[in-house]
Image (tube, rainbow, N blue to C red; front, side, top):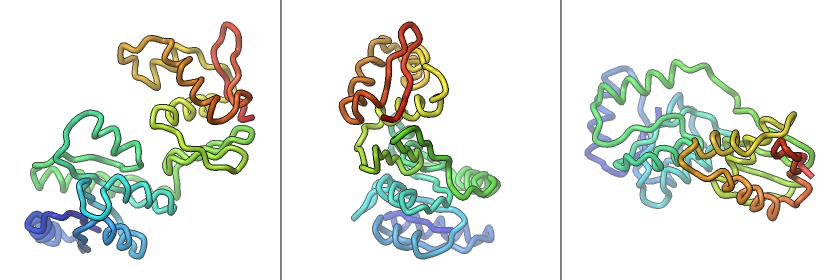
Length: 216
């Protein structure tokens, strides 16, 4: 496995414990070195701190997924807010553990990741000229990369997952915003953002039914 954290005392203690449990452990103390180690080596799991020098953990995970490296990643962070956890999972991490933590919990999380069946890569979606890779958070329209916000990406992904039918505003609000007390009109607002970036023909309005992605 690969352990990436800039707290050398913590790394030393964790490495001793993991080796005692039978793991072979490579270590790195900054994001750039950790990324290169993950790209160059073959690891069964990566334990990665978020707040790292040279390159943060979010960037490392994003770069790995864009490079088609699907090794399970467990993020470590002192941040315990709901949005922090969501951001980590959204960029492609598989699990998130808040510091401080008990070693037995870390060990259980690692073993749980190792029990998951291996996957070559998550699914990608294609509708018309649109291509979306959820793991890499990458969208192209007619072969041209398009930068989307996290919420725009989530909305587009939901529409593309259900491209065979119109999707109503309430359904989109409940799934993309988790209900969250948002007014249903927020959906119309974000569909407008997507149309400005992808072209109006990419998403059509179906009267009385909602929105349907066509891809342009």
